[in-house]
Structure formats: C-alpha cells, structure tokens
Image (spheres, rainbow, N blue to C red):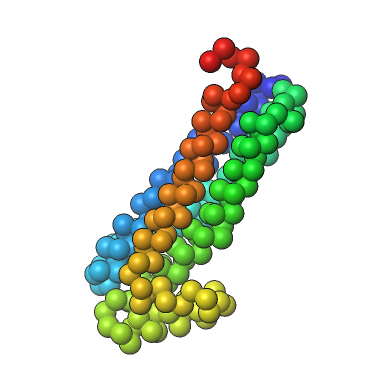
Amino acid sequence: MTKFFLVLHVLAAIVAVGPVTVAASMFPPGARRALADPGDQRAAETLRLLHRICRVYAGLGIAVPVLGFATAMSMGVLGDAWLIASMALTGIAAAVLLALVLPRQEELLEAVEAGAGTDATTEVAATEVATATTGTTATTDVAANPRATVRLAMFTGIFNLLWATVTILMIVRPGSTTGA
C-alpha cells in the first residue's frame, strides 16, 4: 500500500503543482505585456487562461499533501523532522499561493480587463473595479502601480522556491533508507 500511495503522491505533485508553478511564473510578464498594450485581446486571454490554470490546479493540489500524509503514515515517518519541515513548508507555500499570488493575479487581470494603463481615468476606474469585486481597499493601486507585477513575480518566486525545497526534502530526506 505504501508504494501505491507514494506513486499517487508523486503523480499528484507532478500533475497538480507543476502547472501552477509554470503558469504562475508566466503570469507577471504576461501582465506587463497586457498592461503595456490594453487593446491586445490575446494578451488578456492569455492572462485569463494562466490564472484559471493556477486556480484549478491549486484546488487539485490539495491531493498532494493528503496523499503525502497517507504515504508517511504507511511508512511510519510522521514524526521525522524532514517530514514535519516539508509539511510546514507545504503549508506556507499554500498560504503564499492563496493569500499573495492568486489575489494579485485577479487584481491585475481585472485591471487588464478594465483597460488599465491607457490613462489616469482608466487606472482609477480599474482600481475601483478591483476594489468593488474583491471587497478590499488595501490593494487598490494595482493598475496605477506598475511595480505590482514585480511584487507578484516575487511572491511567485517565493512559492516556487518553497516547492523546490519541499521536493528536495522529499528526494534527499535525512535518514533515508534509499542509500542516497
């Protein structure tokens, strides 16, 4: 049963987390292009697709820690430090994705869809749309602040770095019986 859970865990990680890391990394440069040319429908469609990939696969990604927990239980390693660190980093990665990456993608996408970047009036309108849709007032300067894509890229990089660290811990785990 351990091998079965392990296979499912690894497949879920590849299928669910892989697309999120790639799509999230592609989003900031795509947003810069779309904001630079507000009339470019293809750029806006690309952003919508990238955001949808991130949202959908983030939801599917819940299978990774669930299957990982089942694998760890069957292996009897739930108390090992490397696994506890991996679970903590996975939780932090999920928090970064849900609290920092996806909401900023939505705000940038709304700004692009509202035609942000054409003039100051449009920028204000786009931020008002973002505020009305999300119900927040703390991040209403997305369209007016071109550094929003830079911050999104930073948060995406942190998310990807956390997942890379978890992957390394899973491959080269301390006390491994694989002889590696």
